[in-house]
Length: 231
Length: 269
Image 1 (cartoon, rainbow over the protein chains, first blue to last red):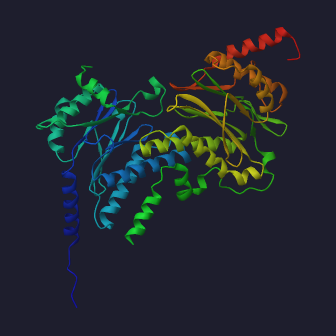
Image 2 (image 1 turned 180 degrees about the vertical axis):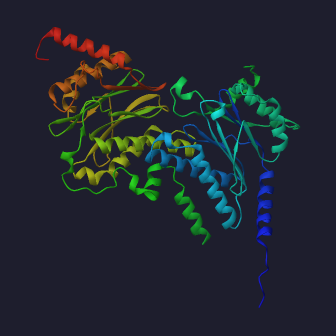
Image 3 (image 1 turned 90 degrees about the vertical axis):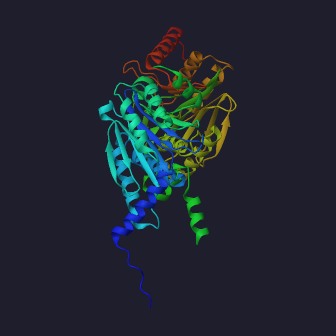
């Protein structure tokens, strides 16, 4: 009778983590950046319809890198979680922290229990009354959760892009400035033109425009004007 | 086995919030309850809703009264709700269930938009509302009926449209104007005389307020404009620019003029 090969738990976890990291490293980067007007989410995405950035709830958005089918199922699960919670309690009771911890639990469970871990990295962004009260939760494939300040960069070239963002970051930046900064960072040492997917969480959506939902996609035309602009 | 798994995943991939609740949390649905017969006398009822088309869109208004038998249960209740950016719904009938149905419908539309990344068509919205009303049929047969009126701007054809429903979820498109609730007979009579094709928005506001005034005049369960408490009907207009709640001060002056005109006439209405 043959014995099954013994694999130490350390080795098993390491193999899984390496596998997930490799998958994520292939992906194009996403920048989530907190600024005066709110939170800007900028992704390099060649497809205009397969989104990497999505709306979850009134003041909460989602950004991801990795395998589309895996993060899309997580996004939809997040929308369901938030809507059920908001419907059964109140809209105010849906928080980014609650959502991030549910994501952390499910990513952690998949990492240890399933055949293969999710090859994704997520950011749950919640816009507050000012930059100090913005929340950016970064979640990795193994269920680790980090509460980031100022900005988050995920994806293949994350370190290089983050270096480019950190130099130009300011609390006082407008959406235009923040988006141009993110775009510059994503474009650095790239020769070919890249297409961007951009959305914002508007800090003053409710007070200034009477909209409960702060999330807004920036259309291709708007993006062209933003990129040329100086505001 | 793989086929089975794939089928299960496809079956679970619903864009409908109501379907998700029915599968995951059926206890949260407004109509999934069993009640003793004749529970209806002990619960508040919401009354008259009127809606009509005008140049550029549709308008909907509801009075502010809820009754429980012969008692006025509330003078402040709101029965017209924005469903999403381009549609509104008004609900007559059992107030508690009606408000829950309206809330569920709002989440349903927003949920679809977030999952699919685009708005549901106006026809699609009207059909979803019909399905919800059908879900309430068992309670409707016990006296807790909910009868909505749905109005929205059809972005494809560029016109405002009205839909009425019966308790079995049957959906009927209405032309020009419609009303539901206990005072609807009187309101409809008024609308028949007051409605004109291509009314301007300000005239449309005056017309719906007057129709509700006539309904309140003859139906004890409908509340008229209340200058003592400064309570006016809830009025929403829906145009290409989206749904807009007509502000209180505008309604106060419209209702004030109406009461003054009728007092001056000094006739039996």
